[in-house]
Image (cartoon, rainbow, N blue to C red; front, side, top):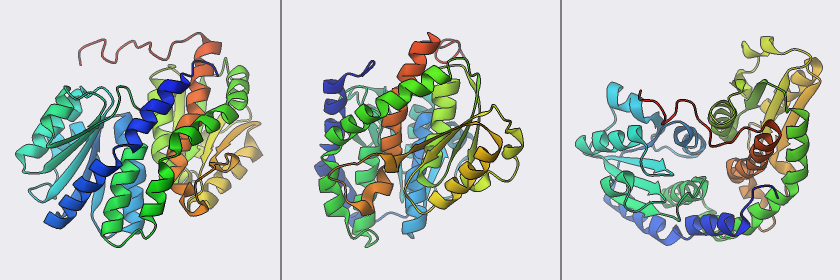
Length: 333
């Protein structure tokens, strides 16, 4: 597979799921001591990656859980933020300035702070009250967040199958290697067909809306300098559909939660207008070892792997490095 370091991929994911005992111990202590609300704080891609877990809590729990943008939190505040708040932060490098400042802000309000990163000496890891550290460069953070939210909901009596789910999640490194292998031909074909496409229209919903936002902004825009529109499948018929034309590249991210019908509806309409609609569907992957009732929870993790293959092939056909930036961490702002 192009640009795919399988040993590193497996090792990084294994380091994430290996945090299970520490995550469970931390969640149990927080629940036993009591807290009132949970803030999921991020910046850019790490903010978008919090949305599936806000969505999970919103449909499964009575606990107030909200994803917030780090920089906005600092300037706007949050009326719920206080001594009975738990705030979670994620950062691959552990150096994201907005997140570091938000940690300081939350701690000043008395909140208990948790950080997931790959660098134990980084500002994020050293400033939070509890740092849970994986191997360097481990991405995405879905395994850790699934374990945290799953255990939390289980302790609240809102997720009966947590133990079974967490046991099955231990096999995710090998499962996702197979996902990557299966996705490789389609990823190459998509990139070849869209080498010169400079605009993509992305649609997703449910627990894949965050990934839709992330892939649009953080990959196609930031890493490939391509223009995009991103729209939630439930909002598709309220404005953005007017941008569709016969040759518009429409990328649809389809998962297996209760919002699937909304995304199917948007994809069906898009095909009536555009001749270039591509659906990336988690149902196309076996996920051996994962019970049917848990497949929907893994949709962001599965499509992150699939689209990681697409990204590497776009890098190849467009001769545009995924590491190239004009402004981000290049210029002061």
